[in-house]
Image 1 (cartoon, rainbow, N blue to C red):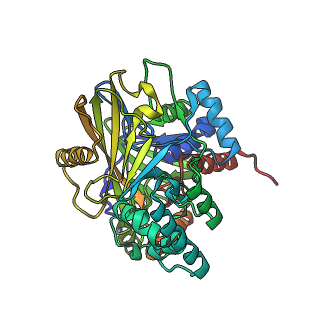
Image 2: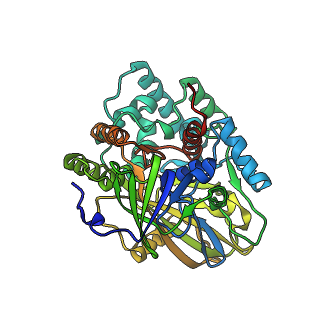
Image 3: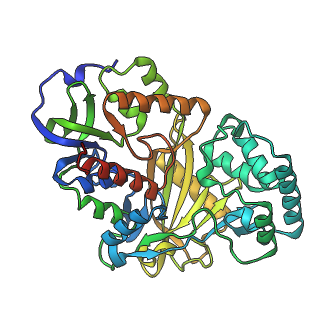
Length: 454
């Protein structure tokens, strides 16, 4: 049971609202933007946006983690394009894959043409055999083998996913990962092996903000635009306890302790384990299982570089080699040329760590990434790193196991029984894109705003 100490003393102030939204990330801002003065959004950080934040290192700009907007719903696209106007520009993703047998475009399974002929032939032979077997996978490793065959797995999917998930692949679930797997037919793979024309992945139509020079840049432009639509956004308010029976949420801010009383709805976009633990009277056994939900944190190492911009990098490059720490390198000026001065550029290296493992010190991580960048030959003799910074997102990726899925489903049901609605990528403990997060949040707020029928 939650320690009663958060409720031991009276609050300094009380606020009443119809709808209370916990968390000012993309989900909370999207829902709050539609509800007007009926909602209050509370956020622990000093700026809204959650993971959709952009930071400045010297005169270079870096997203905390790279995001492209891929619209999966026309209403979301219309709403966001109306919000950002001409600032939102088309940005079709151009990603590359570095393997031990050569470099090709992403997704590798649709672009085998970039690999040597004997590798292409082996990939196709194994792929055809895997599809002919038609086995039902029991875990993630078997899922990859059944989808792509042994050669493609050894070439890319196994080493890359070992770096991404930092766990044995046969301990992960066969479901939940489909968001990042393009599973083409044999005929589509054959076409990609014969043609040098780039094939599209699961997200081919991307968008990215490119505002006029002089102000904030990066994907935080979207977060700020949504935040501007929220009537009552309370920053630097950390949720310390939730009492569903009295419909009260207690927060602590520099101004003191505030009790927010909601008359109708409480929406939590906080990570699901945190929401369960904050609830007064939550079952201890469920709290313990939620604490143990597996996840990875993302350590994004931003390197501000002075010197000529590299050519033909694509927006990002995936690295399978396990002697470098990063899963991919992201080239920020490919998304927006004004993310760095004209005589420089920025690269964001993504490193994954299991959340249960000790966190590497920032200076150690930067040194490891610099060694890795040197290993892959990215920095020329006329380039020098003039600044660095580490952004940590924890949780970053939810790790899917059968047991974890059961625990998360039970936690969502428990919160629903208390009248609390989880929303967002971490609120529901799943993976969803920015467009999906906004779609779910807009849809919830629209239902909440619709007049009651008799």
